[in-house]
Image (cartoon, rainbow, N blue to C red):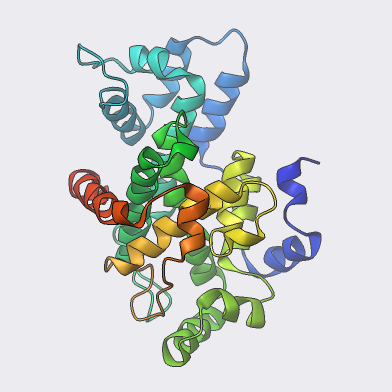
Length: 293
């Protein structure tokens, strides 16, 4: 058993399995993993799988032509993009596109009156942009690819949308109580379900064989002080989450907003004066690359 699996207690796994039906890994990621696991596979083989999904192809070309890679000539070939980015980063970009395919239907209607899928995705994407911007400012994350941080921010609340689908009556009551009583959602989740949306998201990450640090950060993004493994990453996602809500893009409007506490800035080695600049940078990123529909 991997350390990512041991990070989620069996009792939580049992509870979640009884409550939630977790989506399986999208077909394109299954095919991509199979190709990448083959030692004889080439960038051309990977590109052929990616070509099956236009959204993945588009994302890969956008990222390889971004300022991060600093290429002098624009890349228009997915094959060449895969060669430049490498298999590991290509898989992460594919994951991001697959998440929107699996969960981000623009015409999706919520089973819960208080939950707005569009607001949820605006929050998730803005949090992802903030995570990337925080990483650029924090010396702790120098050398970490910004797309890794973006994916952490994008997936941090994925358990919420699963709970809305799998346990609509219970979750509707949780959101209602949180709004009326000013109690944090995670506290009410523990009280009524026995686990949080972070726990649900981490179990999905395990099921999808996502990296351990991402799995742990999803679980502890509400309580990074409790993270025994990757506290800096959990703190980064926590800060991004709180900044997004404070900037008017909460996951669920009308719920209590957590303050940015000094301990988050300390562990990330950030000055408070930098936060406004970080939010502005994320606003620009969000305006240019916001909702994918």
